[in-house]
Length: 101
Image (tube, rainbow, N blue to C red; front, side, top):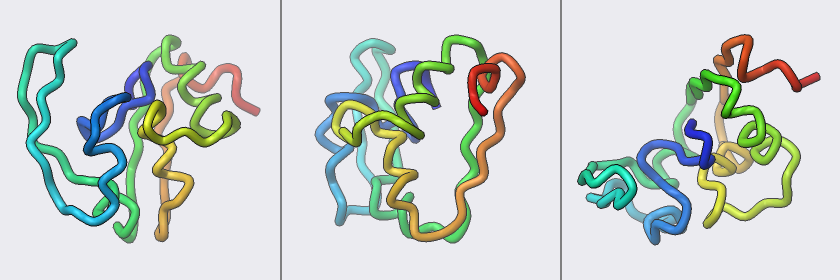
């Protein structure tokens, strides 16, 4: 997960973030000036088990938003984990997890 709360190359404002029926998409990430292939939310939500990796102090606000902020998936794509049908395991380094209970 990125500091902007993106996940799986689904970045805030990307229309694919709200595609709940497709499987994959090609997306262009303007801020990285690169094209990527990503799984879409329907696949992510239906997975039996998802692993989320979060490293760095700059991710603290993003984690707070995912776990406790108002739901706005278009702006905070990693909030798809709230709708996950299986299990989500979060791997956080010490810097990212410092403010969490």
